[in-house]
Image (cartoon, rainbow, N blue to C red; front, side, top):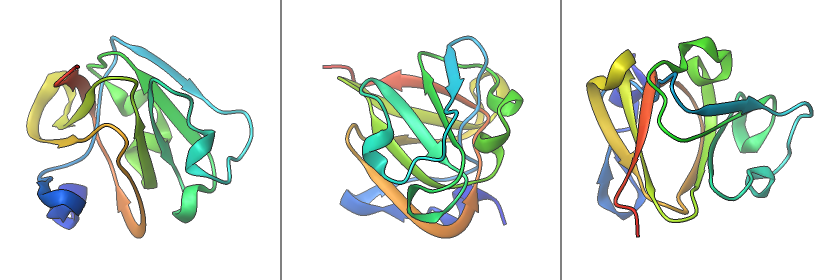
Length: 127
């Protein structure tokens, strides 16, 4: 089942539908170590972890990304955190900002047993 199908509604009534996250045009990086907490996500970034409870390999992005499929963790993750400094994170189920989409509010984090994915992203509602 697609990630978005599993993310029907997140805390605060934020609805997510479709797949999760993708991109190419922004800045992206992978952590060299296996972070053990959401606080390991640097300020200004959106981070995902391969495992539950912010464990396993971490991948992070800042900026707009048209193709996140080049980053393996974005294609199969179980934890995420929008540690954006001033914006909400908008994900897309397809490359080039296509397909289903949803918004993860600034400061929102979640972990669970369901594997998720995203293929592109942008930042919205900047304050």
